[in-house]
Image (cartoon, rainbow, N blue to C red; front, side, top):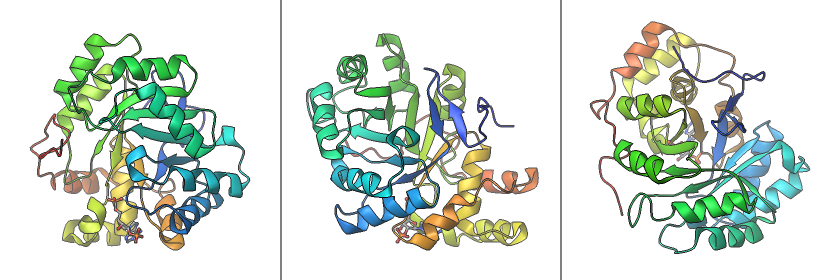
Length: 276
Ligand code: A2P
């Protein structure tokens, strides 16, 4: 059973700081700045997405801002995340630069992109960004339980989100349990394994028995396991397909078959091989 706190709107989740986050977001990792990114974000907003996830290191914050303005969707109806490049020293100053690129005066969520230089190094600056009102919520990404415990112990304002690679093949059960124990949300990136998981025989079998596509099954699995999920596509029809995940439920049997695909041993780590 999911332990996701319920809100009035089934497509939202309540964060520990009282803010709300849409359960599905469009991620724009590896989407080049310019028309490709502007189109993807604009299509997503037209198709009902209300959550866009970018980062300083993606290099496409400008395009996210352009698409948001072109869409005509009011700013306060869209949840925008960006992430600190942790090789930079001043998180609050870096967010001000992000805001200029985005053309916004706040982001909804600002994450430490990975724990470079130690889990707590960037945190005082993240708290400062929130105090300045430039980020409504703050959190981390690519933090395992060990790093999260360090941040929690040092924090004045606690992180409310950890964004990690997560899918049935990377079912980080101990990390998910810790997230629920601490009351913060886990967000899944690369839920399709950057596309690799779509051709798996079990995923395809579950998809055909549910009358859904493999992508919808993998995204739905994340929702039913209590995660916020980020899908990425630059194709309009796929962006649309990936949003059709709130009108069906995977059975206990299908969920168990997908759970069994895990290759991490239910780890509490955020990644098997870190790049920092
Ligand atoms: P594209 O952007 O060309 O549509 P992940 O979310 O795990 O990072 O996976 C993203 C990858 O999966 C991208 O290469 C994307 O390709 C592809 N993808 C996204 N949605 C779908 C879909 N519904 N069907 C097939 N491939 C998809």
